[in-house]
Length: 313
Image 1 (cartoon, rainbow, N blue to C red):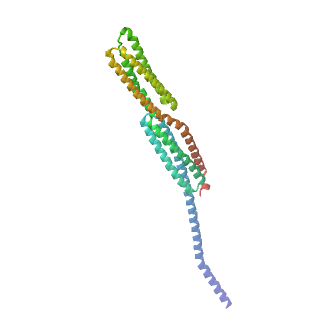
Image 2: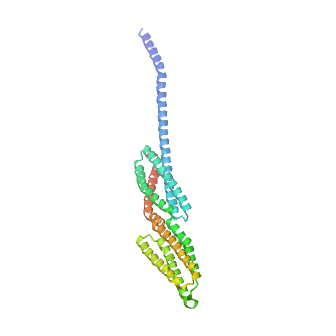
Image 3: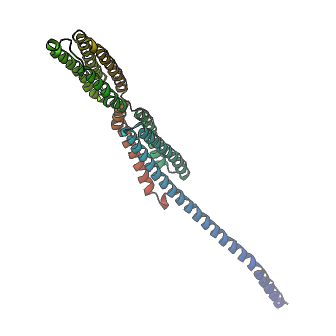
C-alpha cells in the first residue's frame, strides 16, 4: 500500500513538473523578448542622439559659413563703385545675416534637446556678440548704399569740370576795349579768375576724402576765398572789354554761378561722408566684432567636434 502511494505521488509530481514547463518557457521567452526590446530601444536612443549631434555639427558649420558670407559681402557693399552694386551687395549681406540668425535659433533648440550646456553657453556668447554685429552691419550698409562721397567725386570729375571748362572758354573769347592798352590786362584778369576756379576744383578732392569736420570747414573757407577772388576779377573785367564782349562776360558769370552750385552739392555730399564713415566702421568696430564672433563660432565647433558616443545623453 505504501508502494502504491509512493508511485502515485511520483506520478503526480511528474505530471505537475511537465505542466509547469510551458509556463517557465513562456516566462523565459517573455524575459528574452523584453531584453531584446530594451536593447533595441537603447540602440534607437543612441542612434537618435548621434544623429542630433551630427545635425548640430552641420548647423554650426552652416552658421559659420553664413556669418562669414554676411561679413564679406557687407565689405563688398562698402567698396562697391556704383549705387547698384552697393545695393545688391547690401541685400545679399542682409540675406546671409538672416540665414545665420535662423541657423543660430535652430542650433539653440537642438543643443537644449541634447543637454549640451557647454555648447549652449558658447552659442549664447556668439549670439550676444552677433546682436552687436548686426547693429553695426545695419549702420554700415545704410551708409554704404548712400554713396555720398562717390557721388561727390562723380560731380567733381563730371559736371563741375564741365562748368569750370565752360567758364574758361567764355573768358578766352573776351575782346579788350583797347587792344594796345588793355589786351594784357584782360588776359591777366581772365587767367586769374580761371585760376581761382581751378583752386576750388583742387580742394574738392581732399574735401571729399577727409573725415575731419574741422578740416573740411577750413577747406570750405578756402573755397569761399577763391570764389570771391574769381568774382572780383570778373568785376574788374567789365570796364576793359568791348561792349560786344559784355554778353560773354555775363555768360562767364552764369558759368561761375553754375560751377558754385555744383560745388555746393559736392560739399553737401562730402559732408555726409557716408563712404568714408562706412569704411572706417568696417575697418575698426566691425572688424573687432567680426573677430569676436569668429572666436565664439570656432570654440563652438571645436566643442561639438569633441562630442561622441560618451557625450550623448
